[in-house]
Image (cartoon, rainbow, N blue to C red; front, side, top):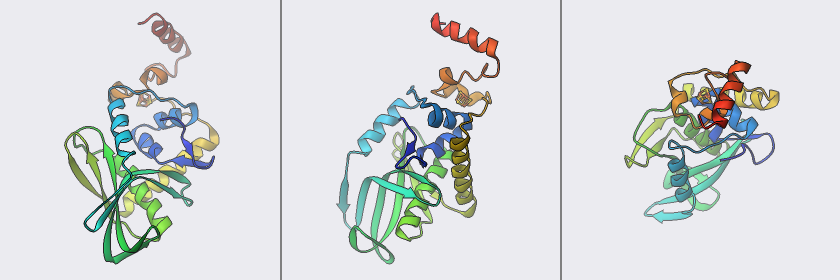
Length: 222
Ligand code: SF4
């Protein structure tokens, strides 16, 4: 993962919503300083995404599975890809320009690991749905996160609160991009499993003396 202004220069990659939900500083480091390191928490997830993203289109019964599907929102200035969209034929659905008939769209986000409730995943998925709604003039009331280790999907309802959160996050990310400011570290338990820990140095990021000391320790293999 690298870069994070996508499509046009001022469109932000959808995945940054998830980063932002996890930690605002992390989102800023990825977006503004191109910081990205895989660790045991991210590397396998990246690989499973790559598998998903090479599968193309598959039709089964009345559903077409569209993998690695590009989405964007001009309103929120976001762009990215859906891991999978299930387009199911439904006469009460919506026209979808690639196929004849009417369809209901159901994006699926794949996540590595076992089932868990992560608000930032819900926001990322809701943003994908909002992009599809804007582009294809449809309504998507729910979708699912699929956890690859558990082989289970968890349905997420897109209520007004979640939608407002997505809009606020997109706005905050754009402000971050405009100002170029990286928030200070807020050291917490999640820093231990953050792949950017060595880049961020959360325990000492506000102390120049401590920062230099930590750099020396890293240089010496400490
Ligand atoms: S180490 Fe902690 S403060 Fe730094 S980016 Fe990661 S989660 Fe955020």
